[in-house]
Image 1: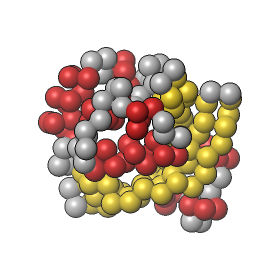
Image 2: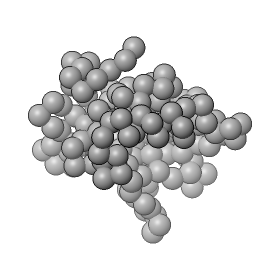
Image 3: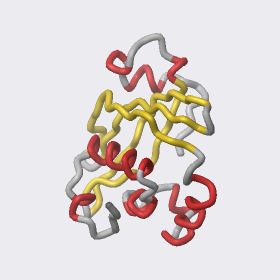
Image 4: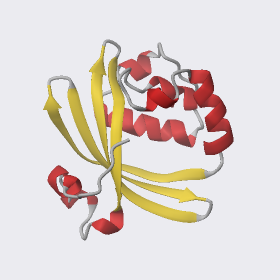
Length: 148
């Protein structure tokens, strides 16, 4: 199923559901959905201001190079009236190498609904507990954490 910027399905998604929908879009190589799920202030859009540019990049660099095996939501918290953070785990097969991460997505509300603004990720090995026991403070307790 292909999505676009006017998709009612995209516009009506709650934050955790948007994270899961982006994961499914990656699985389906629906990079148009990914592009249109970004918030207008997302740092990502500094590199890809035009959807066509991102679709060309995705066709060359993303499609086929990795597969998302699993995505699970851990926690959701509101940090401002129009901003939510979602903590989730990912398992990705990248050319036969399995990567397991804990990620935090920052989502902001736009006129169209919730949109992905930025995120950060850490290797699952950084934690000695399952996703359900990891909270935002544990995740953020890292001197080298980089947001993208």
